[in-house]
Each structure stands twice: as structure tokens, then as C-alpha cells.
Length: 229
Image (cartoon, rainbow, N blue to C red; front, top):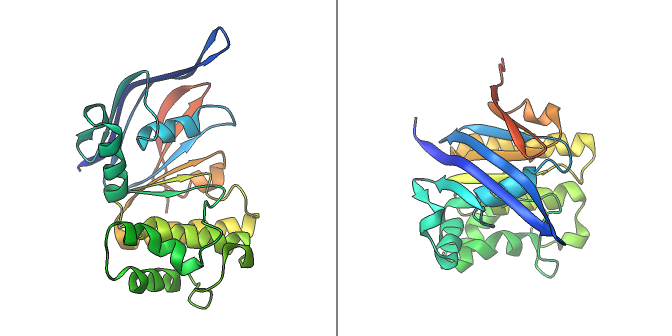
């Protein structure tokens, strides 16, 4: 199968005063198109830093990130932004909705930025898919945490991304609500034939994906396959 994400010899460090702190060391893995993939590790293990590098939100010290056949080293920041807009979706732990926009407006924004004349119609359908057809005109402050994350999931799928990155998508939700959001994410992912990469410290959530990359102290111990029924 085709590889949608390819990571080779990735290294990243940060300066803290006079010290150089290594966050990621010699990371290698591949994700196939259409698969579900979890990056798992304890707090401070480098998971979120790795996700940012995979999505081109930050640059590594060395190594290669390739998305959909494009080597990010060959792109400038504007070209990376265009790639993200065209091929990548995001779901974050803290929802990142625009507080002054309604649910339907939050979902429509990425589509409108692309000049899609059917932005509102598509956004309505997506919100109906995530069970929020009756909450279209509600502002984030009028929605529960679970409902806000559903809006965020709908927005993430609005540009039909080839790959979707989810950073601790259930981190701010209780167990039951989080479980429902993950189920929704996996169902929409299957319907859209998107590749889903989830960063989490929750092994129960990770086990719902096809493959798991284990990371600890900035190093990986390889990818394990999930033997799901």
C-alpha cells in the first residue's frame, strides 16, 4: 500500500538556558494510506512535539518528514501552510473553536477560506453527521465539552483531508464522552477513507487503532500491530 506519512531519522532538541535538551532522537516509522495509527507515551515523552513535526507545524533539527509523497524539507512556510490546508486535518485537546462564531460558522471557516461556495451546506451536513443538527447556531460557550469536540471533529473533516492528526482528543473529556468522540472519529475516518494519527497516553484508546508507535524519553521502541477482532 501507498505510504501517506514517512518519517526518517528525525531529531529535535530545544535550548534551555545554556543546555541543549534532546526531545526526539532518531525517530523512524511509516503510516499507510487509510490506516489508523496511535502514538503512545507518558507525559513529556515527545508525543506532541513529534505530531507537530509530522504535520509541518515545526521543523526538525535533522531527518525527513514526507506527507503524501512531498518532502517537507523542500517547502517554504507558505507552501507548508498550503499543503496543510489541502491535505491535513487537526483535532486538538482544547477544541480550538473560535468563540465568536457559531458551530456551523466554525466548521465553514476552512471551506470558505478555500473559496468553497457550498461551505454552509457542507458544514450543516457534517454537523448532522456528528449529531449536532439541532445545535448549528449555538456558540462554543453554549455547548458542552463533548459537543465542542464534535464541532472540532466536523471541522477537521470539512476539507476532506488525506491525513488527520488528533492530539489527545479526549484529554479534556470524561471517559464516556471521550469514548463517544473517539467512536465518532473512527467512524467518520472510515467513511472518508482518511488516515488517522492519534497522539494519546490512553492505551485503551490506542488499542482501537491498527498500529501503535510507542515513545518514551524521546525514543521509540518500534510499532506494534493491534490484533483487533
